Image (cartoon, rainbow, N blue to C red):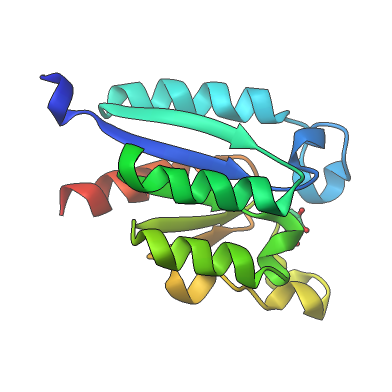
Length: 150
Ligand code: DQA
């Protein structure tokens, strides 16, 4: 396998996802973000995917990383946390770079408060995975591998 066969995927996590493991385990489970990222890294390797991870509590930082992804990555997996339900800026940045997107949420948004049912990302993503806890990120990686090899 050559270097050029390797696809680069940016995994973005938004606000409060740095607290996974201790934050509302009934909704988000007990695995930390580092645990999830390790599993993704390992899983990515088996599919020749080079996976890079970033987390921020700041909307503008997420926007900057999305803009920078245009030249450095082939795809984005994003859990924008609460910004999912509020951020036109993140939506616009994702539209601007025109890379395939898979949206992930640990919890099943549709079993929760109504304000979580609205996502500014879902209709511009290739697909959405929610309600499967940390495993959803691995499912997103599988989905992205299929999308990139189509
Ligand atoms: C979340 C769901 C959001 O509504 C919430 O604000 C989060 C986490 C999830 O992964 O289930 O921070 O994106």
